[in-house]
Length: 125
Image 1 (cartoon, rainbow, N blue to C red):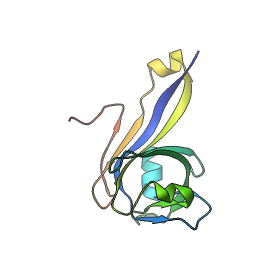
Image 2 (image 1 turned 180 degrees about the vertical axis):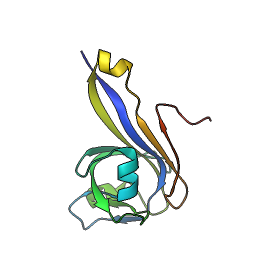
Image 3 (image 1 turned 30 degrees about the horizontal axis):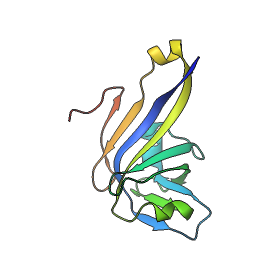
């Protein structure tokens, strides 16, 4: 049996821009991609804290240190500049792998600078 497990998360990232006239995707600062172990073109599940929208797209790189979180293409209808997003990736693991797997969790401030990271331990409420 395969289980779908959270692989990585960028928590409460701020949208820096939304651009309709674009091929599609979510541009993310390379520092955030590296910290969250997200690859370019990897599928993303995005949850908009501001309006409750949920959508799927893929990651593309934005310049390192830019703080960019750009929602592009049709997904730009689901997020606006200033919205807070939870950006997640998932992995298919067998039960034995899942029992010992810890996701990479990246927490950011309002400028999308990393405040801290965790491997499988959720931040206290």
